[in-house]
Length: 211
Image 1 (cartoon, rainbow, N blue to C red):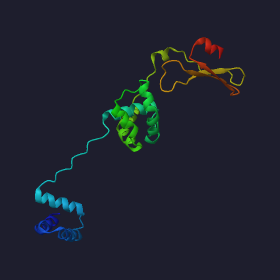
Image 2 (image 1 turned 180 degrees about the vertical axis):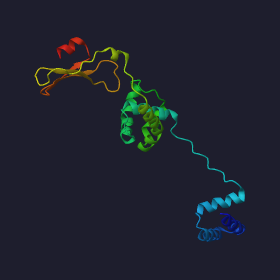
Image 3 (image 1 turned 120 degrees about the vertical axis):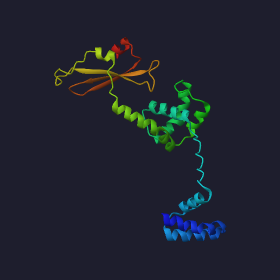
Image 4 (image 1 turned 90 degrees about the horizontal axis):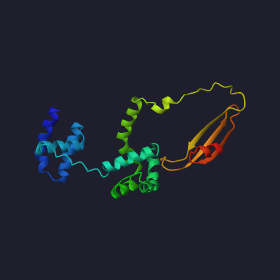
């Protein structure tokens, strides 16, 4: 490297005085003899001639923290889709979520969410998703206090006999449980696997028993 620098310093006076074609010729000669990259050599000449090269100013990010926060909330609402799946959802659902009060964002952020690309969505969500994955792996899910008080009975009946059923309500509420919505009363006969479903508005005891 020392020999290369000496060689470059020797060529520099001619390089600085030469016209465009002359500089190209000198650079080609130096590259041919040393095997160094052309752009690296030009930067080296500028460093030796004018001191440290001024670094190019970093471009200001177009999508700020508010867009990133909104994306993160939307990503969780729609159950963690990739950028390609989330983009069409932004185009159709962001306006509705704002009207319902689920998403509090400015007009500028709303406009940016509609024009953002799927690749940019993945890039902006990557840091938060990596942190979320670490937390998810390390954090043990705790059982709620109410759930601990509910007695748990495992299946101890003869599942070969007809007549034992399991029932459960399946919510059809979307991303929010606010207000009334339809539930499916799902009933399964254990031994045969026969299933019946009935739609119930709300979760009132009388309606559920009737279903």
